[in-house]
Length: 410
Image 1 (tube, one colour):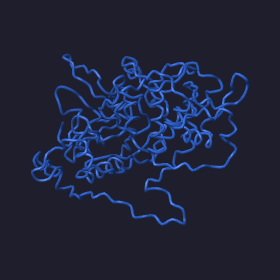
Image 2 (cartoon, one colour):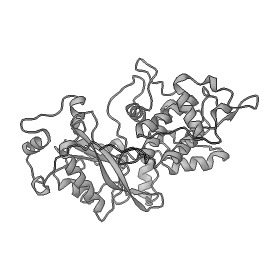
Image 3 (tube, helix red, strand yellow):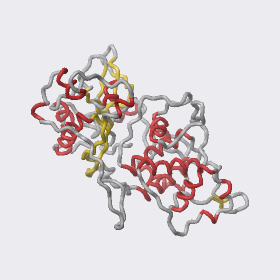
Image 4 (cartoon, one colour):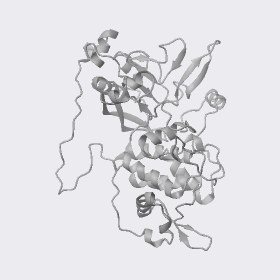
């Protein structure tokens, strides 16, 4: 994402030195596609993997994973936090991993994803269709001008892609294209260019963004909604949890004599999803109220809710665009006891012998210049520290992890 608030020459020089890819940097965008590509960029759909790539080049399977993950974030309102798992032998792209874990995409089999292969139009539709499922959106058949029966090559659609293509045509996310004999066809086994794929995803988000009900599925007047399941979230007394010893923290999280979770199944049984208020920064510099969703340790859920309430009500109105907690990988994220915020702008970095920093995750940390960077002593820092968390920006001698707040300091 570009940052219009960044102005200083030193900042620009640092960004250049770190070779930060800027979203929206497709090269040679066709005249007919410029408005649509700009809309996709404004919607946050442009992954950094497309930086400087030819707009009229065929989009790859891995590249479209980045678009699909961004589309999921747009229509669901939820952050995406890829784990450290490696489901494929030929690809460790975090967008591919995230798309796989969301159920948006699968591989070729035998641990192969084939990331650099061009994606077929029908598979592109399947991925967007899977976004609807992952976001909990129902897309009923609609009556309108778009009709899949108008296309002569409908029989060419693979069985697994029929429902997806019908839905995308119904909602005019995908339109026909001209064939060699001037017929208008769907070309399900054809490919799409990068600019075409972005425009399809932009239409998709325009259609479905805002259709997720944060309180649960929509019901018609003839339906009686069932009572939702309410997670059992322990309450807490803020004054009694601010200065706990490590042993007391262990008892709070795991119970008396408890220990850290050893398997993903055990960990996930102890996680709950919470919704927290956040500020979103718009392209024009204004801030709007939004909601973020996190999977967290159930025994810290009430504390997390209090922390994010404090951040939201703080004078900074600190903007949060990326936030994640539980992920079955190394460290405290596997326990639901650590949170990462705005990871691109709050880098994890090793400390070199001369005191300089080499980013290992994210790109930079520019508090006071980039609004997404977390300042020490600011609202985010104070909210977490006051509830017994440690900050990766000053907790260790070997590295800096400015995005990271952990309950046990690891």
